[in-house]
Length: 251
Image (cartoon, rainbow, N blue to C red; front, side, top):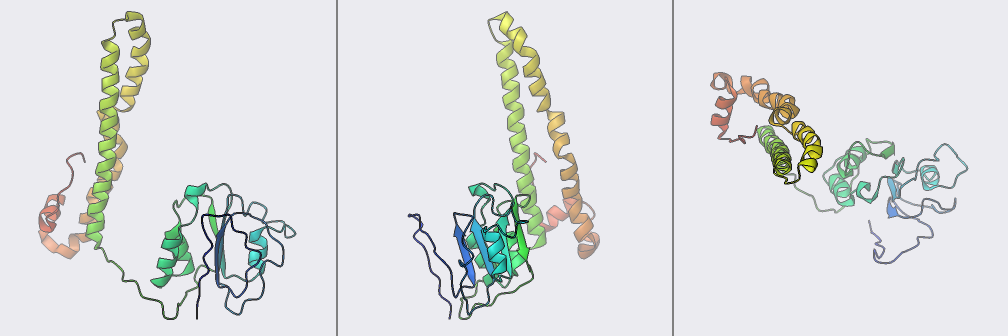
C-alpha cells in the first residue's frame, strides 16, 4: 500500500530524516547529514528538493548536499537546479504526478513539470523508469488532433502579431506627441530617438519579424496533409475551407 505524508505548507517544517519512501518532494535547505536517508523497504524512485543552488557542488563527494547523499541513497532519478532557478522555475508537482498516473516515464513527467525548458534544472538518473501505483484512479487523456494543434498555433502567433501591432501604434503615438510639443527645443531633442523607436516597431519590421514563422506555419498543412486529403487540398485556402477553419487577418 502507498501513503503520502503532507507537511503543513504554512509553517517552516523540518524533516529530520526520511524512511520507507519511494518519492520525496520537498523544498528548503540544500544540505543534510549522511543519515538523512534511512532504510526504505520500497524502491526509491524520485527525489526533488526545490532550492536555488542544489547541484553546483556536485563534484565534491564529501559535500553533504542533498544531490550527493540522495543519489547515494539509491533513487532511480533526482532533479536539481544547476543555479538559481527562481521560485517560478521550481518543478510543478501536479504536472509531474499526473503524468506518472498517465503511464509516462520519469523523464517525460519531469519534462511536463518544467515551467521552462531552457532553464537551470536538470535530471540525473534513469529517465526511462516507469511507475505503477496500485489502486490509483486512472486519468483519461484528452486527445487533440494534429490539425487542431496547428489552428491553436495560428491563434498563438496572431496574439504575437497583435502585440507587435500594439507596440507600433504606441510608438506612432509617441512620435505624434513629440511633433505636437509646444516647446521646439524639446521636440528637436526627442524627435530622433522617438523616430528610432517607431522604426523598430514599424509595419515592415513587424511583418518581417514573424514572416519566417508565418510562412512555415502556413506551409505545414500542405506538406503534412496534402496527400491525406488528396486533390481536394491544393492551397491553404482549400485546407481552411475543408476544415472550416478561420485564421486572423493579422497573419
